Amino acid sequence: MSTQSPLGTVVVLGYGNQGEAHARNLRDAGEQVRVAARPGLAAEARARAHGFEVAAPVQALQGADTLAVLLPDEVVPQAWPELAPHAGALKAVTFAHGFNLLYGSLEFARTTSVFLVSPTGPGRVVRELYEKGEGLPAYLAVHQDGAHDAWALATHYATSLGCARAQLLRTTVREETEIDLFGEQSVLCGGMNALVSAAFNTLVDAGYTPEVAYLECVHQLKYLAELLHARGVAGLRRGISGTALYGDLTRGPRVINERSREEMRAMLTEIRSGAFAHEWLAEVAAGKPTLMRLLSQGDADPIEAGRLRAVGGATPAAPPPGPGGAGAQSK
Ligand SMILES: NC(=O)c1ccc[n+]([C@@H]2O[C@H](COP(=O)([O-])OP(=O)(O)OC[C@H]3O[C@@H](n4cnc5c(N)ncnc54)[C@H](OP(=O)(O)O)[C@@H]3O)[C@@H](O)[C@H]2O)c1
Image: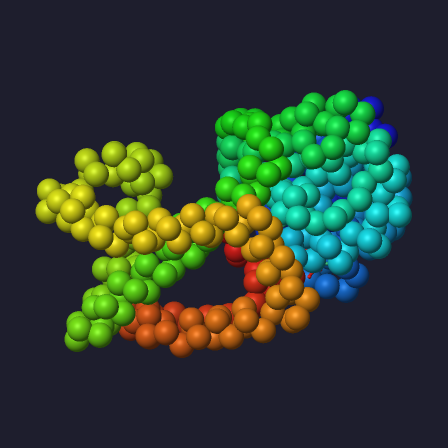
């Protein structure tokens, strides 16, 4: 084990969105890092090009002290049984999201500390901020306190990742997982995409020009999101015109109303009961037929034609989210 760090030799399993940022930040912070990746695939080549020692997952675990599991959540339940027999001597196992700690049936040696260090943003931003001497806030949670050192190890890992430069928030695995799933379903992905599509299609169905509708309902969102990020809801309201403000306060509640809130409560119940996780893992096991059908339907929505007319660019190749197909993803 390295004498400099309580984490010892860290194996970063998965060199994707989070894995690349974790491996590079930890190395720059002085940690001893090696990467575990499937031989012959893109992640392995990228990690080697960045100067890492890379080995296949089981081999990489030999002599390691800490394992950072940064695979797509849906592949962990299949990958873990092969790794578990080689993970018994690990001091620590860390995850960036609690999905598999809450819903999976992963088994760990009793002496291993298992914790969560979850940066509040995409890996690209974790890396960019680190290089600027800044950091993203991160959630920390302990799943299993193997040697009564889990909080200390989680804090050390998050500090090497650069997140202590911003804020480290202690939470539980359950809270991080449930809030993360609810946020992406109701606002950041599901809610936002459904909202802009419905608004765009309302205008186009009423005979308005698609590119104008696109610029208004989708393209401008970036500037308002930046204002929201910088100033919050009350601050945003003080940065828009009086007409926009009156429309916001009187019409917004007609779009998101008691019925929408009822659906939000139902979605939260599905998350808390594990029904959503069960449904998603069954979908993965079946080869993702529903996901692929809905993705194709979405690609055929008139909003895509509106986008091409308004801002140009190529039609999305639509790689399915998941292994190797989501290099730029932020959720
Ligand atoms: N994306 C985000 O912004 C974000 C934010 C916070 C937390 N998280 C969490 O971070 C974790 C990692 O997510 P991610 O988005 O970084 O993943 P990702 O980019 O989708 O993929 C990670 C890597 O895993 C490799 N991989 C896939 N299947 C594998 C297998 N069976 N064995 C070994 N390697 C495999 C892939 O490389 P190859 O196909 O080349 O092998 C890929 O590069 C998840 O728990 C996620 O919830 C993500």
